[in-house]
Amino acid sequence: MNSHLTPFHRAHSSSLSRPEDLQALVQSVSPARLLTGRVGPGYRTRVQLELRRDHAAAQDAVLSEFQMEQDFPSDLIARLSLFEVQTQARSKSEYLLRPDLGRRLGPDAEQILKTRCRMGPELQIVIGDGLSAAATRTQVPALLPELFKSATTQGWLVGQPFCIRYCRVGVLNEVGRILGPKVAVLLVGERPGLATAESLSAYLAFEPRPGQTDAHRNLVSNIHSRGVSITESVNRILSLASQIRAYQISGPTIKEVSPVCRETHALDVT
Image (tube, rainbow, N blue to C red):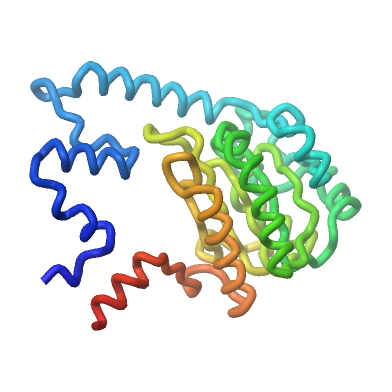
């Protein structure tokens, strides 16, 4: 009778005899504001104050500046020989007002990349500030070395990683044009919301080049302390990258299937 339930539902279905049990369970697995209660038509005072706090954090994340040498540990910069280039946006305000400038590298960036990076790598990792410098400075120091190490262990020819300031996702096309990687990964700060201002995304593209859009890319999102863990994100990124390399394409043709989905599908079939 319960064969259609996922392992999560089966594990908790017998322990939800009281409404407060359901409330505690829901709030433990999601940072969303669910079952928070109300006073008349409005939020409770505690929830309202939390909303104002998190809205302020989201604004700070968007407006704060990313500076690699200040935001990343010096040993990480030295170990991976990290360096920074900039898009055509000259300031944070211009970056926010002109998204197109964040998709194109600045005048000196192309020569720097050609001088300091390997041409034609199998996997090129790029770090960008995006719309949350807070996410980049919080998640990348833990994620980047694990991703680089795991990719190398799996036999990938990994290019020289580097950072891009005032970065939009579309800058992947410029990176592809200049360096010619087989698969490119952009670790970039997500637009912050009220659940967290420190969520990172990983965009993947097969042989990125001018003219590509998000329809040509794959995505692992919600990388943060209450979302996708560092270990899980590394595994998912490299799993997608392997599929992209094998099928020579990225985008909706490449499907990511989680272990839970695979088990649920198996249960449905049987």
